[in-house]
Image 1 (cartoon, helix red, strand yellow):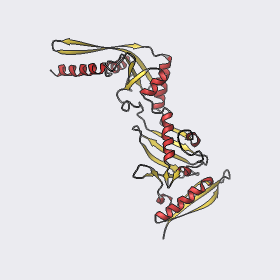
Image 2 (cartoon, helix red, strand yellow):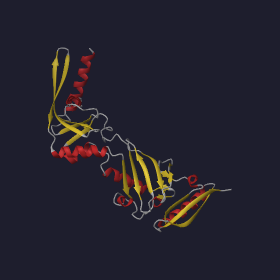
Image 3 (tube, one colour):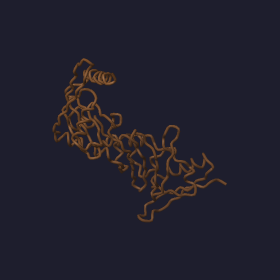
Image 4 (cartoon, one colour):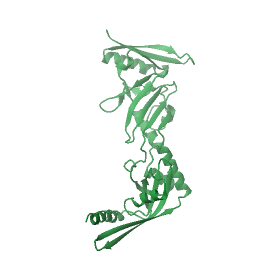
Length: 295
């Protein structure tokens, strides 16, 4: 009786989804353990619905196979039986290139972005030559955050059914097991580093759910400052991290550094001061900020 009910449930799923599946639609299955013909065929058979074309990918080896899939429902005395048969198909050159590129991008675990590359990715100011220029009121600015998110989205580093469909000229309506809920096939976090002209930088980790965590910045000399999150999850500079330390940034952003020193001095039991500095190796002008606890 258990097997009969299982068959009825599986067939019911196929029949319900059949009206939504056209001959032009396909499904994408992930199978990172697939190494043999049998493995790939089993994953194609396990695809949901009655899609006539199924793609199966191993993200570890960057191999994708295409299958013609036929679903047959037979009425038996003890219930309904579902039979699925698959036959390998050749990938076109365009399809192969699209899948290989998507999987390669999904496996990237770190990228470095020049700050100037963000200028066209939203409303971010194009004048920031230092990471301190992308902070407002001790927060990382909203325009910078929006531009960074847009840049990562446009870079296709979180590929999924839609992006591969566009690149391959096909219509993948969804992706299967271990695929990031059908939105992206990425299962690895990615560390993004934004580099500035004064050698300062900002770094953040984007996890597999699309959340940004582990924010930090570095000054022109490579001194790291971890960022906390405010109640709205916006990265923020904390004054206590500046105590007994000196951080230097491009002097073109002296106004932002001077404001930050005053803000820290007014809002905490900390006194901060700024002073002009010169970078020894290339003679560029910097501005330093140093803080101390008030006595």
